[in-house]
Length: 120
Image 1 (tube, one colour):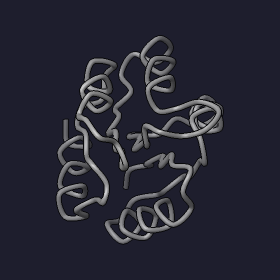
Image 2: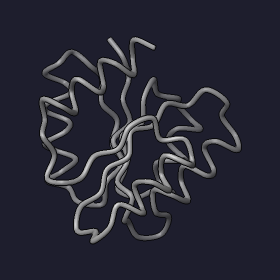
Image 3: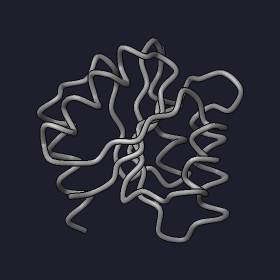
Image 4: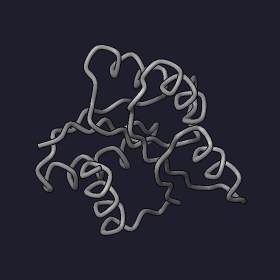
């Protein structure tokens, strides 16, 4: 069982991911923005982080920058909805996101990505 930190400012998205990941046998931690997620990760590291890009206080790109500065082997999957271009997702890859997804999420593809990331 892996520990996965889900960071998203939308509670329904966190709840959906929580149920799906828990159903796949993982322990799930949640945070409502990047600042809270970073604090939580510092206290209790996770095997994988799934983060939204557009959030208040600290967005996903700022979060990834901080994570890659401070934690060498952090694994991140980034996601975003309501964006008009692929640029934020491409920047997320440059900042260390191993995979990126647009919302609405295709849960099968996301769970497959989670399995892949945890296996490597």
